[in-house]
Image (cartoon, rainbow, N blue to C red; front, side):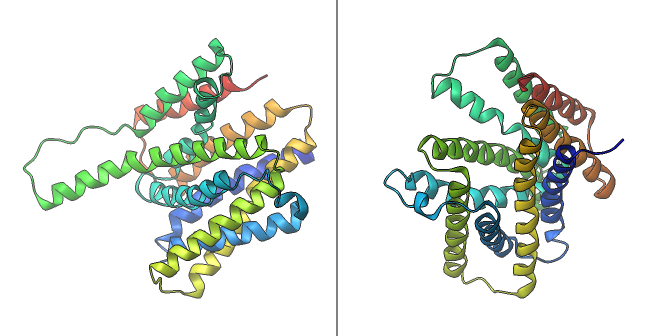
Length: 297
């Protein structure tokens, strides 16, 4: 079977998305300061956005530019990346990628509750499936009772991290999606909004690192450059997939989200030997079902 350009872009976008999670997973093994890597990642993504998407400079600085929303994005983008880094460390690639993909249901819920969009049975069903999937993915078996010890306290903190950081990823990426929609509603072009958000995220992360007196090292920044290239590669190939398949937006949407969950599961289970319970497997199946139900075929 010959891959069309659209499907090639989709495959590349799915691969880049999972590669970002895998790189964050390997950061600790490679002794990379994730904070510095995230700062460099956003700077590289901003430069690539400027070079590839060519936003109109005049349109970037207008009275309608939603600076408060962009400032919120500047905080949430690196925060979401930090949450993702901690999620893949403690909960693994499988759960973290699934939580990130399920975050698309937060804007859907906000559309009903905040923006007055009409409610449909199909969308409510998809949201219910998504919450059930999230519960199954984050649920871990209860530990056997034992005496309180420092080791026991450490184990409790570790178990809390198993669900806390994927949940943080879910919330952060969902709110980021809502904020980008607000940028679009304000009339700011996609490329311009993306550029400003990345630039602000990098600048704020740099200010934080200077305040914390981080110990700079070339390998941290080099890892961030690689992360930024892959991160932007995920964005641009997803855009190109929509452009190459203009009559099949539902196919692009469903294939992207289901592809990331499927490939993330394979990478997590085979490359990183991440253990999954039967309930986690049910959660993955429910996540795929929620995306299918959500897709406007």
